[in-house]
Image (tube, rainbow, N blue to C red):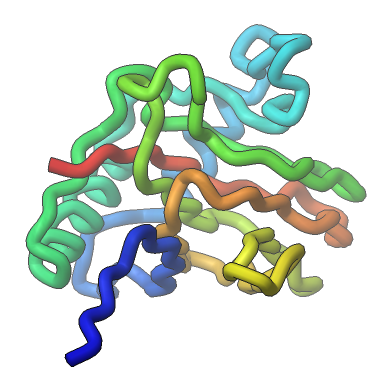
Length: 185
């Protein structure tokens, strides 16, 4: 008998929040854009890849997104998503011709603050598609990429350790994403 053991797992889950939900992405977009200024942007020379991220305070519709994701993830996978203790809610604003550089959100030196699962929830996108490109190795197959389109009102849950970048925003308006960070219990 051959017994196989999975040592690691990387994943990407795509979906949309049900239409019956009270979540209003326009309100989330306005909340993120109202907090988009120099004082809320991450400005750390060591973490230069986070220049597109901004701190976002609490908002009821963001909480409803988190609640929906937590309930549905628990139902499907029997594990509960909880917010990371630090920086669990961020906004990403990509103005015309901006991209988000390759990064992941695991802090090797501070794992207790690091997420296990990240979520990108697209609250504003244009006609021209942008993509999240995940970079990974699959055993002997190195430098692999998986491209996922950013869809209006759609979310992508994924392993936090995956390196990824967001392609250039080629639309005339800003592209806005909600970035959520979770641990599992």
